[in-house]
Length: 203
Image (cartoon, rainbow, N blue to C red):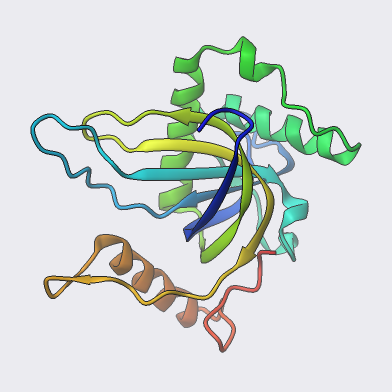
């Protein structure tokens, strides 16, 4: 899946307003990280088959974005924040072209920024939700041993979806399902969820 391709995603995410790590600048960026388990099943030196998704783009894709105070995107992530801010600015005047910085920054630097942001958002952003939508691919970093493939994309739209039944394998909840249940308990405890169990923050 190359740059510019369209991605359809349905998954559990953590998300929120993202500020630059250096200077804590708020440039209207929202970011979403899928809650994929951290384990990489492999055998005979096979690469990990799991995929992590990192979405970043304008906060205008999110209803009631004012309820999300900006949080740092993660140490080393400022290239990605600048990319998302550029996309946000272009969107404001109807420009759908991709920023030149995708071609002028080394792949290694892009990947370091993206994986740093993913780690920060997926672990520390406060809002979880089951989201679906379409997004345009910006980067596709391949899997390695003990590391998932990471796809970075900018959303066309994001909306809340119906929560699927968590999978049970051999009498045990998957780690993703367990993390999701824990996040839901916390959100119910602090009153962040509607009665139907959905977050009302994302379109």
